[in-house]
Image (cartoon, rainbow, N blue to C red):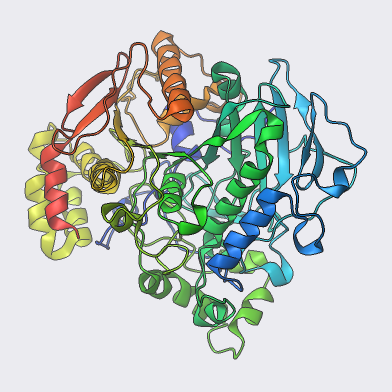
Length: 596
């Protein structure tokens, strides 16, 4: 079965297809606000950022409740229906496991044997549907289903906006009943394969684990690993906060439901992945863009402790906004615009609205890779996230696991529209206000061949991604609890149309990890990888699998030393790869000086 593509126009370039598939605001924003590229010209290929809306979720249970739910899920509890709490759920009695049938805490599942020999299980429910009274609450473990449940079709995407290439609203897609995950394994039954759990990007407002680019079959086959992808609640339905929602929680917090969904999925992996040939003691969580932001949030989240043994942060930051900032910039305006602000029972008002109405209301947080505006996502609530992960790492209070972290060299290359020098200067002035002169001095157009567009690509890539990787790596080694491996992805050897400038843009690395060439182009075209593409796929897939297996990505043809803050060293992922001391050092020193 071929997984669904994200709806796209016919795109003749690898670059454009990837920019759409991964076009999200991969960080939680910097300390600066103001104009984005979309405010100076037409939206880029990421779809642009136009405000419409989503409503949030709020918690009726505490982080400790979430931990208990995770433990129940891992041990095979039947969730809200009560019942068996051992690893052998009663609802699986009478079902014989086989090559495509696996017993889980939610009942027996039947997957699909692919031509490659990999077995695919799609649309596995890991939590109860967060609908009705469960909306705006932490996830509940899935009740156990009797008999054998087919796991052939992907589950629905979570509710989200759909926009066209110009940023115009097309409609709302997805369903609130969306908390599913997918597993690809070389073979079921007892095994000790490393497990790679992927968290998709999309600015925490769009995206789905069913996108063709994330299909795990080839990665599982090539590297003899078990691959898991998952859905989590998006936009306001995954992240909204409000004091009355916090009052429903024993710990007095609200929001972070998308993060709690991910924790519940990881708990499901711990309790069930052995039946799929995976080793629950060798689980790597990895994410790209907003998925990387979430991955690093998991590193800082006490309820996630012990649920994974390694983490890979691809093009994302380890800082999160405060509860007050997310509430004032996202939650409060949304609740006001929904007409619930004056209601004596705000949670009931929010739960009584149609999901579509919530999603269409401003602010929706629709992602833009080059934008610096506030967005939905993990936030410091004092419980699920006691502090920013950056601060927790510096204090040695995080979930200390081997960490791999990096960025691509031209992250925003497909989201910045053409700029004249005057437009570039105006954009910087609007965005950075009193610091604009300093920023312009640090990024003079002359340093980038007189090309204002490339100058802003470098600036926005550095502040949002490249320099965030250095900050995170330095914080992670501050207490030297576990090794850190930094990388800088510079590969741009893919085939393009004439007159198109190849760039190592946001999300390009995913093609070489998952090796899903079919996802690159739509319509009647299919991208044909060249020799360097194939070399990069072997390099990336091998490094990710080795790191998952033993916490060290180095291997034949790839020298990759652990990060040393004094050297500022990194692996350069290119064809061929290399090693370097210092990546954009002067620029990152500048941002460290300017930003808190």
